[in-house]
Figure (cartoon, one colour):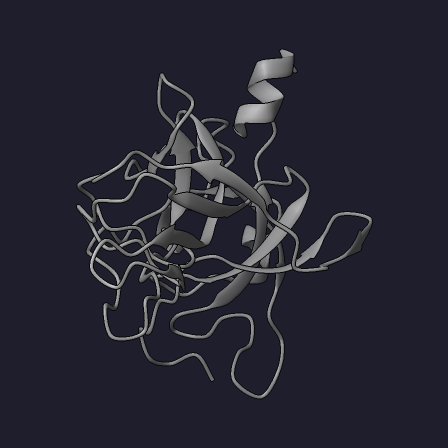
Length: 192
């Protein structure tokens, strides 16, 4: 059971109307960008169309979930593929891998118990500490205690993870979420 707080960020698991095929798109990231980004963190576009970490509970320009990056290491002089972006690395060819499908579904842990009645409610992101640098994973979680119909919350709970390690009502319920309508950058760009 999910009785231990062990947040792991947003993990792509499926998509509305289809299956998860592990797809992502590549976006440029600024040379020497000063904030580490971890696998499972929320990414947004800055005013120049470059990827940055989104560290707001109510995201304003989310583009997707960070899935790693590639760049030419300035010391080793060859291309690296990394699960996390380590802040301030100097490289001119940095590409962030981002799961940017607005119909993508993600598994994420809640910071609190979530009952069946929270299905269909929206949630904010709650944990904003640096991720796990040993394995490059996010430690983001959602604010399950304050799930509500608030339309500015970035994610909607659409299912619960039900299995040997998780069930509805666990102390730290694992849930399946999708972008709430009108929050994802592609929806905003299209005016929906």
